Image (cartoon, rainbow, N blue to C red; front, side, top):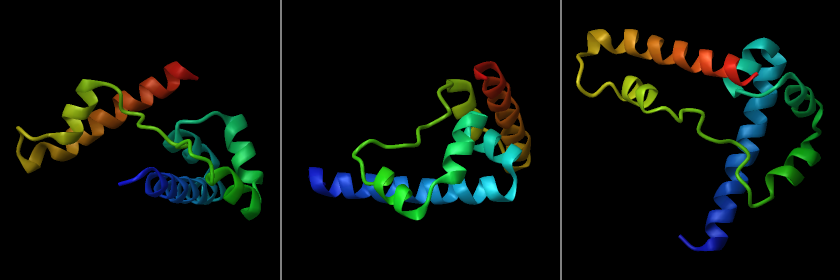
Length: 107
């Protein structure tokens, strides 16, 4: 992949992310804050963006979203490669609880 293709992929990912974020915000603001891992102020800004503004912001070469899972334990719980399918739900729930706690610590 060359630099031009990477930039195009980043722009597409940014636009998809902004559209998803606006949709989440409009359907359930509090849930959007949690799921996106952003502040109330950021949610307010994203909610007010026009389509033209979203296109302009998305067209930059900087990826707007990032991985929120920076903890090895959470990755292991999500991956769950050494446990049976019966424990998968419990592992995902545990990972969600850990991530929610980290979201509260960051706020």
